[in-house]
Length: 117
Image (cartoon, rainbow, N blue to C red; front, side, top):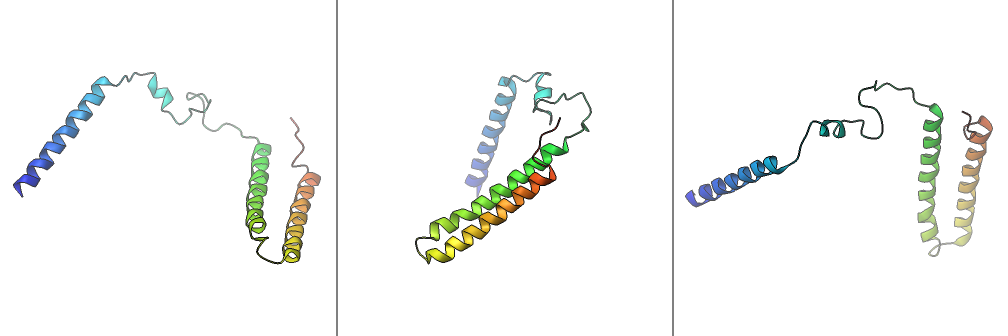
């Protein structure tokens, strides 16, 4: 029991010494405060966080996600095609692609894909 207590104490001392050495060696300055702010991606940290956001960027991102997820649904169909009936998979894939194209044409007609400034 005492051996375990002594080894735990030694380990804790080593950890504390390493943390102290790290804090002394690290080069922190006041200018690093801006780097660790949540607006590191090009926004000015001194300005308002409630900047107007273009709805068109949001719509394009949603359309991309929808088509990206639906394309990942096609991969299992392609892989399992060689094990089962080809006619069934051809009709399923054709219907799936037709639904994708109908959605794309609908978005096109609604004007979600036209880029206006």
